[in-house]
Image 1 (spheres, rainbow over the protein chains, first blue to last red):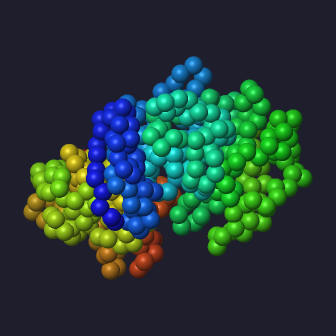
Image 2 (image 1 turned 45 degrees about the vertical axis):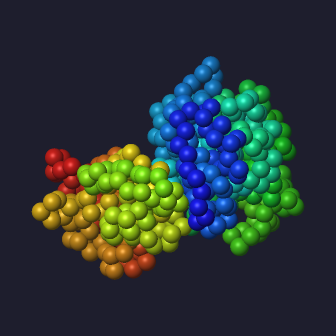
Image 3 (image 1 turned 180 degrees about the horizontal axis):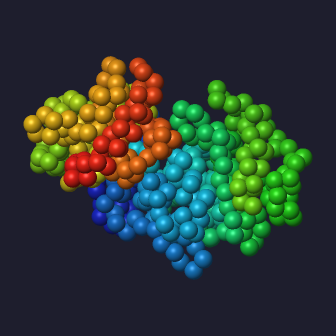
Length: 265
Length: 163
């Protein structure tokens, strides 16, 4: 690991100021991606700004039809939260399936969403549930937030404060996990909402998480696994690697989507 | 260099460290607590699991400065002062839950976190919980047996403090 200066701000304003003042600053939330990246010397920030002591970024609450989760809430706390289990149980199960217990004790929802790893679980929930990403500057709709692999709408000195999930009528997340890392080879989140059905796919897209609009239309007309019969997902634009070819991932999307719909009804 | 202060196994410690020092390096190299092992060094294997504020974490994927002001428990903090093994350690010995022993400190610390929150886990829950702890000697059969035996022992001895 290359040397860096370390900062522990106590407020969002101080964190943003430290980030703006640094030559090449990087925010660290749970560090479950960033610290391994630093250890491999794949990143060499001048400054590390740790958000762990920013209390205003923590906590889970409800606001008129939405579930609101603070950016620094760890996966284990989302998985165990009574509020999350009651309002969006699919989200609690998704959080409980990330990595392993020790990773879930450190990794955070804000860190995962800001990192936008193409095989991460949370982006599927944020996009599939049509969440709103709140930052220190503005609110960003999920549809505008994810902009390709490891790329988001966040400005260089912008940080996620909370994520607001509209509570759906029903939702389920089903993934085919890599057996070693538990990252999603393919993960599908299906949500039935007042405004129609949303289907978000993670793990598969070469540009990261995306919506399967043909599936959404079919499921909005008939919300049953059968409605997905005959919808072929093209393998163009999907990842192929040692874990799964793009053709296999295309096939898995259909299988995982049907299972997710079956889990909803 | 920043100074970090934390409570390790009940004792207050304070040292100057570079910010890039990992918690596991701090424990092993600065404090001489070599019971916490470095296995894969990539957050997969769990040999480095310790507790920070009562929750199990992989100390190879946390900086020492991030543990500033926290309460840390390592495998050295598990046995009683007179050397009597913690019931989880005793159960691993009784059930042949180890062969070379390299993964054992992390296994014990991970299991201590499980049993604190779930005193009566099913075999499936034990296997799922140990997702982040890898043993390359024996497979997991006797480890799971040891965990179930430890759970039973701890239920029978509610006064025993896990930390």
